[in-house]
Image 1 (spheres, rainbow, N blue to C red):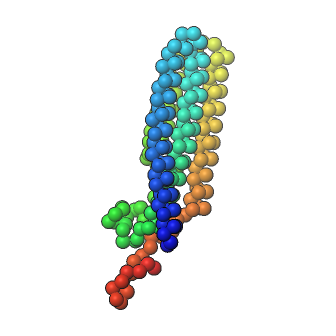
Image 2 (image 1 turned 45 degrees about the vertical axis):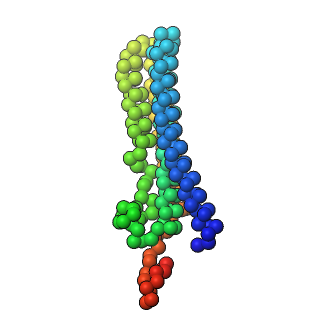
Image 3 (image 1 turned 135 degrees about the vertical axis):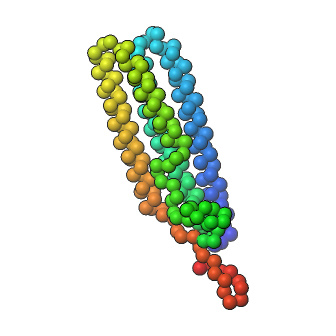
Length: 196
């Protein structure tokens, strides 16, 4: 591997890790924005009523879920790219010493992982559900009740379809950039190590 290529790949490695860090920063910004929304809704509630507030909670909850799904896609994409780059520099013997053995396989992390994005998705879904349980009974108008049910079903359907789309994008990425097996080191007759 030429020195220029090594420098380029190492710079890419740094950028991919920066992208992962930026994604985690976005998670906390989303949480702060969501908390600010509830502060604003406490003032709006007395002027506009439960139906409007509940509609805003539904919309913002599912938009937040969509953002979390997208951030998760970028996170796993960057993790997979980092994994591919590591295999450009690491040897087979490094796994089980420097890195866990299970990371030897390409793409150790699938789209459905245990990162913070799934905590956000569960949190926003739970808040939306709890808000519906407490606020829906206070909506007395039949038209407003129908509007909330339709909005909730539409938001769920759109988010579900978007989640499937993001999952298929990751699967496509996996097919197009599968990485390669780690290099092996062999010792020849004179004791020098060489790549094979």
